[in-house]
Amino acid sequence: ALIEHVRTYIAERFDSLFDKTESGLLKALLIGDRRDIPFRVQENFVYTGTVHVLSISGLHIAIVGGCWYAFWRILGLSQRLNAFLTVLVIFIYMQIAGFNIPVIRSALMGALFYTAILIRRESDSLNALFLAAFLLLATNPLWLWSIAFQLSFLCVLSIALFSPSFEKKLNKIPWGALRRSLSISCATVLGAQALITFYFSTLASISMLANVVIVPLITFITICGFLILPFSYIPWFG
Image (tube, rainbow, N blue to C red):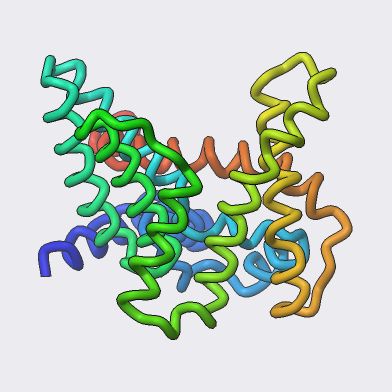
């Protein structure tokens, strides 16, 4: 009940600050509620091959976990206690964000990363991904046939396997952030496009370019969305 009250509070706060489309997008990005995104907007994401950005993903867990981990460090907590509290925050956010397949996958991988810090072991993204898949399918084997499961895991697997290779091939690009963004976009398109074409009967010829533009933009919007909630109570802002 408490978690549902928090979700409702966040949704109502965004509704009071923005129009329906803007509020709908922020609710989708922060709490996994897509109901208020207009159909034409969702269609545009599908046609450009960027619909995956509307799901709560590792990006959100990285932002939430990273910010709280930094906060605990500022307070002077030990690294292990810091990691333990960050794992708790990730699981709380997982419930606020809707407790669906991409959210659970991202939260499990994020929790495993901080657990590795807690037990002083080196983390491995592929091991974390397969362990998350195992835990999800052990809970409900039928999730294997879910579009959300397939798209979420295939995109992350593609990024883990192919992004480093793409980044090496793009080594002539001088800006590291742009190089990483391009490599992740290429890997994401490689992993997601076949599924998007199969399920939505569309082949987005501009998918790679659209991802290069939209992924950094969505990252910026997501970070702003998290900051808006506390800062909106400052009189000049709200």
